[in-house]
Image (tube, rainbow, N blue to C red):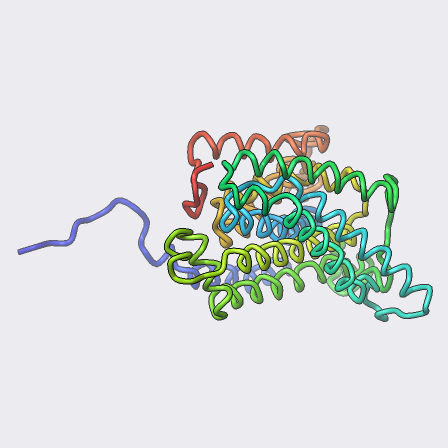
Amino acid sequence: MATKTETNGPPREWHRPWGIAVGVALLLIVLPLVGREGAGVNLLNALVRFANFVVIPGMTYGSQLALGALGVTLIYAVMRFSDFAHGDTMAFGAMGVILATRVLQGMGISAGPLPTALLALPFGILGAVTLALVFDRTVYRFYRRQRAAPVTFVIASIGAMFVTNGLVRLIIGPSDQRFADGARFIIRVQAFKEMTGLSEGLALRTTQAITLVVAVVVVLALFLFLNRTSLGKAMRAYADNEDLALLSGINPERVALWTWILAATLATIAGTLYGLDKSFKPFTYFQLLLPIFASAIVGGIGKPLGAIAGGFVVAFSEIALTYPYRKVLDYLGFETDSLVQLLSADYKFAVCFIILVVVLIWRPRGIFQGRVI
């Protein structure tokens, strides 16, 4: 008679998502009760500071990286090459949004408390899509018809990267620019202190909330498109098996067209959200290429869910390892003269480089078992 084999691992219940949700809910119930005690107030102050400088920035930055990595992984899955021009495509799309924002502001049009850039976003998307299609029709389609090796496409994308970077610098300039308007904060530090009575304040910027909301909406829309529409299913079939898809009558040029449209749209949204949250500088978007590729590879290149997960892994790793924890530890009763900072903020990009190297060596297929690079 067969018997069930016993394992030494944790119970299956702990792996269920609702188990995590129940744990978080219990934590939110217990913490206010602890806060009524004198000793618990410092714990709440420590948690608020940690949320203010690690959790909220990590969620925001992770959402921006996830959107950028989705574009990279979409191109890799369908077109079968790594697009090194994606970071500068983000810059080009964001540049279009900035120029359209200035025109709208000059006409007296605004979005009230929200940034005017949200109204200008379609114009930036149109510009980025046009640029991507120009490169596809003049460069990539030729090599696609020649059945060129993937490395040929990669080299071509590097050339497209330099051209795009030069265009952005020529049109809008290399300097740092800010284009966020409207209300700056949803929750202000002083208002939070008065509301809670804590000495540590929590701030939530409008751009951070917009980033999270837009990222959720865009991801849901993308997954609905890929799973519910005939075109999305055709793109998935082409990505899984090109030869079989061609035999089924799928038009490869139509698939390529919509792949570039979606990738350029995601790049523009990610670039605009990053510029609103921080600032716009063309060279910064060139630097973003490393964490975006790291996000796609960590999650599993070619896997949309992996791109999202990888974006948050990379973002929280960068922020958590470069944040000074001295004030948090002071609230917890561990006073120290050191900053308690594992790495200087100057080494932020080195963190994602280390993550990238480690994943490529020990788990090259990533978290969601994507394709091997």
